[in-house]
Length: 503
Image (cartoon, rainbow, N blue to C red; front, side):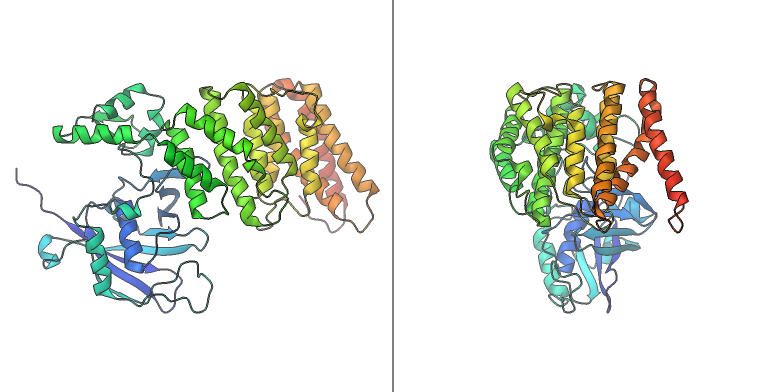
């Protein structure tokens, strides 16, 4: 059979919401993956590849294509590596978002499919034309933020240097790429299916079509050694682990967030040793990274604590499945988590933003699901009392919850019921303790002090969630009835107040 001729795609990529317009027209191989297209966009627009990125289709924002799968991000995610851009562009336009803080969005439109003769001898990828100067990094909102003016020759010089061959992937634009599996679904099964790991080490390839189970394919013999080497190289070295942990304690930047992703992905995929995991846990405990500048007010420091919390949650989930933490280390980590939840004060007052309080409570909630909790040296310590933790958290609040704190707080009591760690009468007692304490604070507060009332209202929202969640647990019927009574009373009080919002 005759070989299929090579094909290329011509794309127009425009930076959204910029006037005058800023756009580039480029030609890339038809089978270009999204991570390769990322590199082309970076070069074409003069970006410095110093921030994270993601793609999504304009007709389907439920699926995000990312360089690394983030298990803490609940949207559907697929890897950019191995995902051909043309398969998505044939159905709709794409959005490429660069720098999640500044949110530079690029609209990508497939203009035409080309053959080799249409390239006039030019090596793809290359830039055909464009308009407008690129933008400076971290300059969103500034009046004068133009960077280097459009220079087609300079762009193509950089593209040819970065892509010595058409289908190359420049090392400078790699984001800790996954080993050799072709989809995230197959990768997730790697740690639970020894056959997949054996296949990788034997130089075979794992492919997956849609939701079907991953299949093991035999590659060309020449690729066997390379594939086996790639699979073995997937294990993180001690140097990489040490560097990633060191970057956790730095002021929040993209290197900090990148290190979190590297560690969490390694834990998730099993490409990190138990000895390395214990070292990470000890470093977090000894340096009190969950408490990083916890008394300060800088949001950046709160982001560092939240980043460390993400790693801790993954450590606990891994230790739950395959215990590796020595008992003293696990106990010390439990204590650190509890103290951090009590001391955390960072709250962000912008809708949708994550706060330090929510992150600390989420970590606390994961701890409650661990089979060895509680394992404290002094179980009678008041800091291990869940109601005391909640009261301490509420005492720090100086504004309305809006960043996930309500969900995280309700999850603490839900976890106690789901795991059966607290009997129904005791759980009811804890809820009554919080409600009574907050009601007493409202009665004692001066009329012009709104904070006690704000805290009480936030707690009522927590109870509203619990009212729904506890209906699934027959054993906790009495607790749910108590909570339901409080919610009904709140509704009655709200409706009785003239001018208040009707629920």
